[in-house]
Amino acid sequence: MPVTLSTPHLSDHITHASGRMKTVCTSSVIAHFGIPPSTYHYSGSIPDIKRILQRGGFSVRSRKSACKLTYRAEQANGKMKTLRRLHADLPSVAKIRPLLRKLNDAADARYLVLVECHVLLLDGNGKTIVDTDDRKVDRRKVQGVWVVEGYQAKADQQFKWDRDHDLSIGVPEKWAGVKLVDIPADELDDFIAWVHEKRPQK
Image (tube, rainbow, N blue to C red; front, top):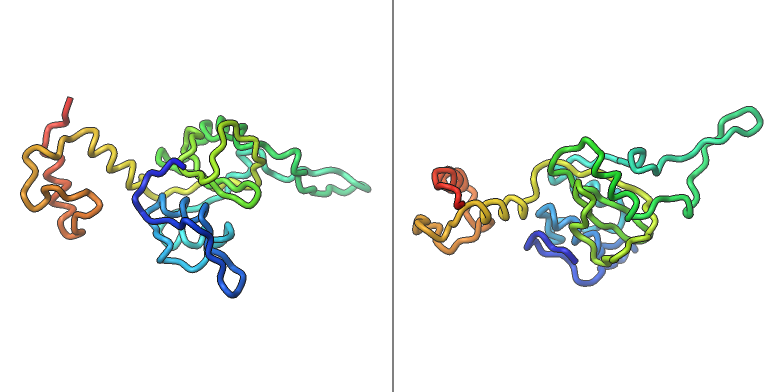
């Protein structure tokens, strides 16, 4: 599974007495946004995932039309009747990847993709970010797609810091050997100001 954050995620499903679940795949997707399983009770359904992400400050919107998941309409007895697309008619994960590249969403948008009994996360280029059941050629039928927007993923930000700046040279003593995610919140502004003063490594 491609992992981009050190945020914890489940290694086994948890089923509560009510029958509702906290699952491995959903907790892994949610962890990408810096939200650990300890902060929510249930994540076994799309409404659960949306609620958790929205509570975390993210926007979650359906993209089913753009990914050709809309219902089709047929005329019967002079009236239009809307029919659910047959499972066989649904596009595969492989087929929606190029569709995502054409969307005009935020540059740091992530796409929550629902297949049968499973969720995965793709980026704006259609590349898999998180999938606990990854496939080399993905023919799984897509039942829903939601765009998640809010801010650039913390892992991506940290990668950019590490790529552009050698923080091992001249780092102030109080931050020496400290990971970016471990810097106290009240010191972040000072740390960011110090980083911007450094010359990017060529």
